[in-house]
Length: 160
Image (cartoon, rainbow, N blue to C red; front, top):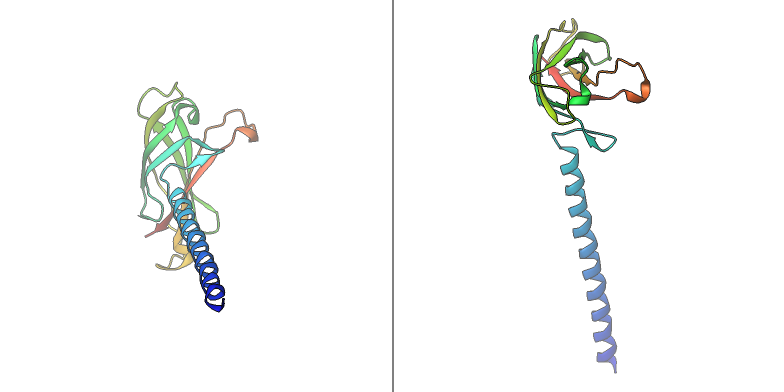
């Protein structure tokens, strides 16, 4: 009788252990899936893939002028361009210009773009510190001025 009770107790512990292992494995798997989504090279806005930035890549070191390339859906452009802004760590605009479509932009498909944006290097820049960081912001052109039609993708960069 004692052996049966002990055997039942071992079965119970084994089932609990197996359940814990399954929960941990599923949790790790979901964590990797979520990290994979965060590392996507195609930013989404409201669930739509609107722009793919090829250069500069997030975290890359940049000098002035910055060469920008990628592709954006045709409705990201207006008159074959869209604005690009470079900001420092404090969000101050240190450079701005436009990306230009390399082919017909009157489509909902991806259209390649490129451009060169000059910026003023932050005066108090110290390599390896927070103020060496900034961002290149790719803004959807919005000639209507309607805030509901605004969209932007920010690529963090490091100034050299």
